Each structure stands twice: as C-alpha cells, then as structure tokens.
Length: 290
Image 1 (spheres, rainbow, N blue to C red):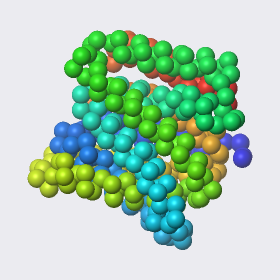
Image 2: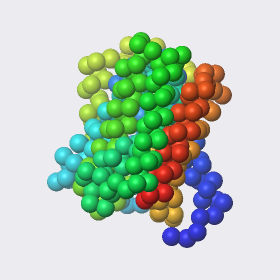
Image 3: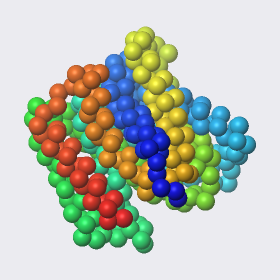
C-alpha cells in the first residue's frame, strides 16, 4: 500500500464523521419510529447505493446462492440485531454515550479473536489496552447523572449491539474470499427480508405519523451512514488497507460526542470525557500491538 496522503486522511475523517453522525440521528429517529422500523429503514435505504454500485460494476450478488445461509446469518447478527439494539437503547440514553459504548468494538474483537483466530492471541500491550478501554466503560456506568436504574439496561443493550458487530465480523471470515460489495449487498438483502415481517407484525409502521426531522434522520441513516459509508470504506480499504482504515475507531467516539452536543445539546460530564479518553487510549494500545 502507498503512503497515505492528506486526501486519504480526509476520506478517513469523513468516514468517521458519517459513522459518528449515526448516533444523534438514531436519537432523532426514535422520536417517531420504533426500533424495528428504524432497523428496517436503515437496511432498506442502505442497500440502494450498494446494490447500484454492484449493478454498474457488474458484480454478481450471491444472496440466494448455495451460501445463502451465511448471508442470512451474518445479516441478522451484523445488521438486524445491532441496529435494533442500538435504536432501542438510544431511546433512553444520550447518543454520545452510545458512541462511546459502541467504540468498544475493537476491544471486544480482540478478546474474541484470541479464542477463535490463531494469529490474534493476547500479548502484554493488547491486554493493557483492553483493560484501559473497558475500565473507561465501567467508569462511564458510574456516572449517575446520565446512567441510572431507569436506563442501565438500555446502556447494556447498546454494548450487546457492539458485541453483535464483533461476532458478525468473525462470521464474515467464512466468506472472506468473496468481493466486499457482494457480501455487503447480500447481507443487506437478507437483513431487509428478515426485518419486513418483524416491522409489520410488531410495530405496524403504516399507522405512524412521523415528524419531518425523524423522517430525514432515518433516510440519512440508511443512505449515508449505512450505504454510502460502506462504499467509502471499500474505497479506503482498497487504496490504503485494513490497518489504515481501522484508525477510524479513534475518531468515531470523539466525533460522536461533539456532534451530539452540537445538534442535541447533550450533557458532557467529566466522567464522559475521562471514559472517552480511556477508550481511545485502550484502542490505541490494541492497534499498536497488532
């Protein structure tokens, strides 16, 4: 891979900004939509740019091939479950907390990788990073101003959503020889298929009278934070590689906290700042060890 230039860092920052912006937009979407409907609309609108790219690049979509069960399983674990859990959790907690909680994904993936991947075993630096990062999360849960007995379980559900991303990532290794665009398009198709009957049976979205801001947010979540963000991720991966692209993990919780304050005026306490610093440092040590 070539040495990254200013343009490459700008794309990386843009990707982090798009993914970080998802959290406050999910919060706005919950003003009118239920968590299942939000998850459905995210994957539905997210599939549009990805499938269009596959069409114009003549990339075959294998959603219904002999490996369909892998696409369906990954679609459920990597999209349906986390999108639902995050939307459900954000209804009761600030979106900046969700950004910090979700940023634990690199830490969780390191733990899971130790048990399931031969070349991802713990070493001293990784262990230090994991301990620092998760210490920040434990400290965050002690912030009684933002997390109390009324929303404690909601915060845990968001953490569970981040774990689903990690498990989905490990499962994706089963079909790692396929093109990224094909895999993403296929799991988006299956996630949409799974969520259609759930949305109809559980939330009956046709009865809703959504606010304009919620409607804009949920469309943005699908088209931009899901679809376009994945295409941008492909571009960065192809040009600069996985290690460079993984640096986006440092920026997401920072941008997410700043954006939630700008757009929603959410409270930023000292414990939030210290937890954010601990998580970013933890991610740094984990990445450095790799």
